[in-house]
Amino acid sequence: MRMSGDPSHHAHSAFRAVPRTGVIYVTAEATKRGFSAADPSWCNLGQGQPESGELPGAPPRVREVSIGTDDQEYAPVAGMWELRESIASLYNALYRRGMPSQYSAENVCVSGGGRASLTRAAASLGQINLGHFLPDYTAYEELLDIFKAFTSIPILLEGARGYAFSADDLKKEILGRGLSAILMSNPCNPTGKLVGGDDLAQWMQIARDLDCTFLIDEFYSHYIYRSKRGDLPVESAARYVENVDADPVVLFDGLTKNWRDPGWRVTWAVGPKSVVDALASAGSFLDGGGSRPLQRAAIPLLDEKHVVAETNAIQRSFRDKRDRMHSRLERMGVQFDRVPDGTFYLWGNVAALPAPLSDGMGFFRAALEKNVITVPGEFFDVNPGKRRTARGSRFKSYVRFSFGPTAKTLDEAMNRLEEMISRS
Image (cartoon, rainbow, N blue to C red; front, side):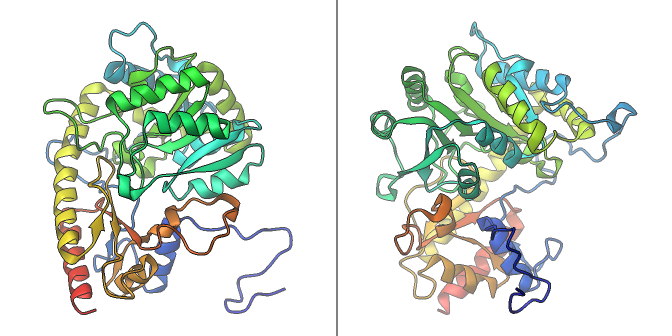
């Protein structure tokens, strides 16, 4: 039966309605109003990517990629061996110096994008209870619903506590709910909360003691704003793994955020060899592997000196953007449960603003009229299969603001939002 409205849309009984992630939804709504990524009149504070141009002190951007004769062929499903070796070496250099257990190429599985990496992992899980935190990354919702082998169980974090969650809290959740695995972003998208240092070490000890596998999305692990002076501003659970092949810890990262190269679609999972074998097997029927030319071109970007220079440049630029945006939004009346430890997002509560701006969706729609894109907080209330049926969302009054764009774009966006609020 043909749906009303757009005649190009049809209802076919073989297909289900596939929901859009938060970023895709807001981009689609903006596009209806004329948005284009190439149009400088728009300020996209909804984007999930960092600015990709030159940064002071950063290595030069890659401008071209050569393609050899062998690169016309498929890449191995687990990734090119040379790239896997480079990734393992980087983890050992950044997080595991002097430790007897070291990552090798066999501990690395390369994929064509972050969602592909996570999908391989989800497809490899058995009939278990898997915990996930609220709020968290919007794309987890469909990922946790599409594979029916495991049961996803939400773990609530409270803004009044700054989204803190102690080791004791964690242990109670794992034992009380019979969790065999936990999926999380760290630092968290959207709150910016980082579990790091001694806290993260305790979490990894619990993983070992209770045999609970941690699937940790570390795509923002180089956007850390609470590091000590002189330390490289990075954090990873790899630092607290004792045995790389025995500890139930799987880490996900890639060029998307920490190298500011989202268009490359080169990502990886790092974990025990047995898990990597399972991920490669899943990849053989899910996606078939990533781009061979881009994997080869990525190898020099994994050099430690390159990573250190890029990360320090990110730190200087993005910390300043965070502070400026946070200050201006606070003056507008947006409230924050915490200043983010990491990521390039601010998780703001707009409840104190005049209606309809006091609602995340209302704020989003009003901002669109100013050619500013944001993401309503309710999209981060991850609810696989819509099993939680209570009306409304705990995050209905929240908005995620990205400071991924350039400082110039952010300043213009703040001017427009300031005007919007002052006239409401």
